[in-house]
Each structure stands twice: as structure tokens, then as C-alpha cells.
Amino acid sequence: MPAIAAKPVLFKGTTSIGADEYTAHLSQAEFQSTQPTASWTDIAGETTNFGGVSAWVLALAGAQDWETLNSLSSFLNAHDGETVNVTVTLPGGATASADVVAAAVNIGGTTNSPMTFTKTMQVQGKPTITPAGS
Image 1 (cartoon, rainbow, N blue to C red):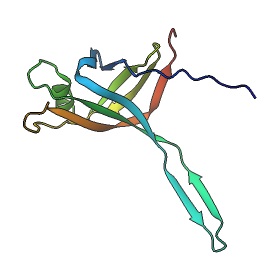
Image 2 (image 1 turned 90 degrees about the horizontal axis):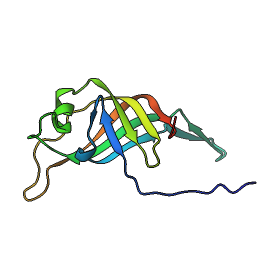
Image 3 (image 1 turned 90 degrees about the vertical axis):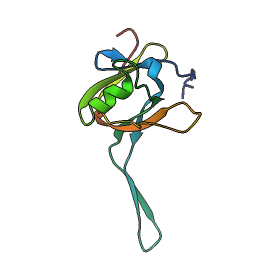
Image 4 (image 1 turned 180 degrees about the vertical axis):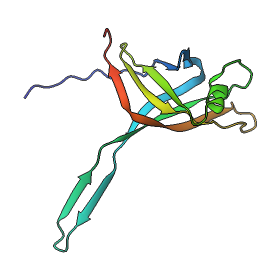
């Protein structure tokens, strides 16, 4: 059996929503899978495990910006509930993209702290990964 090498890297990439790049607005852009699971144990104590097809969400964390024209905060609040295309460029140049349902973000924050938001948005289907150089 061949040993498959791994190449861990720090995540640095870009994030575009529609035609605009919002990299400077974000500290997290992550497609996350959530697989539905269940188990059933019969009277003899034997357990059967079930796993369904994964659903996907996009987790974003970023800075609230209410001053910059076309900021990500303003965009997401203006397009709440609409489907937008999101592309995340991964280290090495591959991309992951998907249609995502935009969701409004927090407004305001805590004294003496940067105004930030975290948001989980529903992905329609699953992300498409395009290898670097494709």
C-alpha cells in the first residue's frame, strides 16, 4: 500500500462574491460539510450506523464595515435571502465555488473591540473544486 504524503499549509486565499473580491473584509471563508447521521441499536445490543449525503454551508467571519461603498457587510445585508456565487481561492491556486444563500450580518458590537460578524450560510448543492492551472 503506497504512503500518501501530505502538504499542510497555512490558509491564505482570496474570496469573491459575485464579481467583487472581499478578501480584505474576511478572516474566515470556509465551506463546511454536515453529514446527517443516525444509529439504531436492536434489543440484542447490535448497533447499525447510518450516514446520509452531506449538506454544505459557508462559514464566514469578518469585519463589519459600514463606511466603505460596496463593503461586504452592506452587500450581504442588501442581498439577504438571494443566491450569490462565492469563490474561495485556496493555497496553491485551486478554487472552491458554490451558489450560496446570502444572509444579513450583525450590526454593532462591544465597546473597545473591532466590529465583527460570523455567519453560516446555506450552500445550494455542493462546492465545485477546480484544481490549480485548470
